[in-house]
Image 1 (cartoon, rainbow, N blue to C red):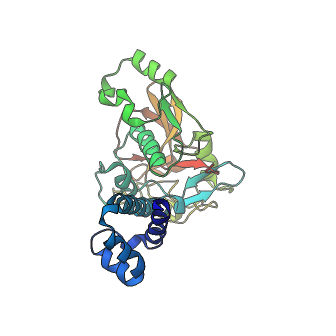
Image 2 (cartoon, rainbow, N blue to C red):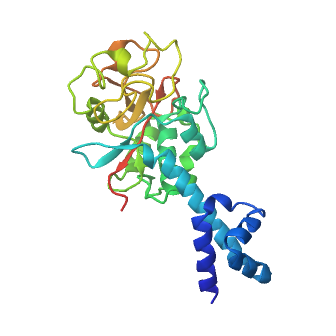
Image 3 (cartoon, rainbow, N blue to C red):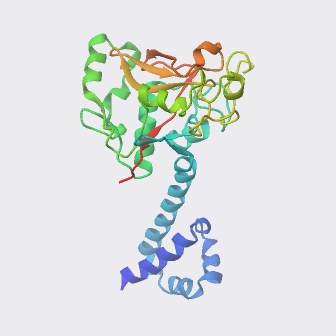
Length: 294
């Protein structure tokens, strides 16, 4: 009998989840679902059922929020088995997952910056867990970032041997359905957009990217310029973007130009590398995930 009651409560809460957040919601239910509200009032001993239903409503609202922030912003990459974010990860998206904002230039629609490669992979795993997907990254076989003991250390003081050990034990499971960084090959393929331009989406950089010639020495809100043929924005300029690939034990690649570099850094084949633990005002990232959520 309790299961039946719980089912009825859950059904109402999930249908009208946007309204169920406080005691005032009880009056809302009285108007919309009088018979159910009266039952709840007559059975105060069933607080555990009410609590479970309220938690379910909150979880659905959070799932809807993440779907709007991330899944709705994914683009299909023709001929490939991954989806890619149409934009660089914004400060709003970062703050929703990480509950902080390290960026120098502040703005919800600005790309997040001052994040290291390590920060980016932590973000990917945390986001995957929040939306119920299998995280791609693991250290010594452990995918929960809360259990990554190396995060408690000052990585900038690591020796060569420590980075060598890290590289041997840090893995990416591309078969998992969670979020991850693209490889350099994936990033460059997507940046070309099925087209043959010098930059991502055009031979005229001013149409598609922010660089030292038009940025005014600052970052800009994402998706203000023309997208490329796959619907991806800012892949030539605004921010350089971390990729998965290693350049030696400590360094990782990033691709794309940025707001304070010249046009030649914005070509689709451009790439460079830097310390995985370093933070830079011109480096952010975008994320990909498998085409399947199974």
